[in-house]
Length: 261
Image 1 (spheres, one colour):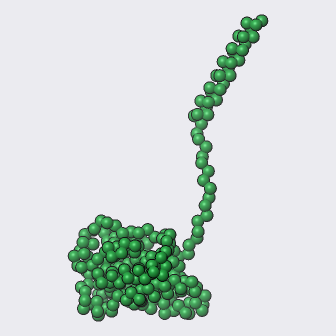
Image 2 (cartoon, rainbow, N blue to C red):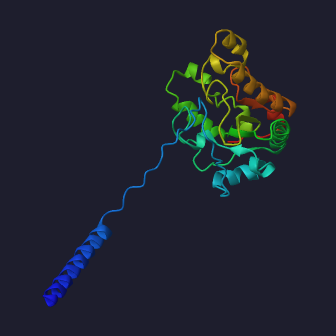
């Protein structure tokens, strides 16, 4: 009888081991449970986006010609200025990259120096803000392509871009389009995006837009910050675009610089 109990115990032990082994093999071969990632609510930003500095160390053929013409890379004057050339991307009113191998912002040296001063003035008031450049020099050949590609009657095209036949301060490297970003790279709310074609973007219409509730005092305040530091640095704004600033008049540019073809 004792031998029977021993034999029965051995069979029971072997059976348990076999069952446990199969369980471990199956558990090992089973696909791991999917990791659960908690949902994080991201802040909603109106008419703003996170800016990634697009400046590149690569010097293209177009940029080499700009350097030879005496223009300078904005980043070489102040590396803390962000550059996000809209026409080097599809994020513009033409929805296409019209700048090709032009990836860095260039200006006349004295104009770039004024921009450096503007950045310094901004940082002295708001250390967590920075200028972000959307457009700088624009070769006239590219402006001509932009002019021809706008699908509106020729008499209305000047609402969107200056007639390349006349030339513009962008063609001289004496004008800059820009805004302000915070420490997270998010553009301040200026009431409209860059290159918004309508009265809401017009500085001359701001008080009316305030009265009609189309522009907030916070948006106006953000625009005023930009205008004040740019004017103190020697730039002047225009009445129809909050983002555009000239370093001098067109006649002065024509007498001091050569147009960039």
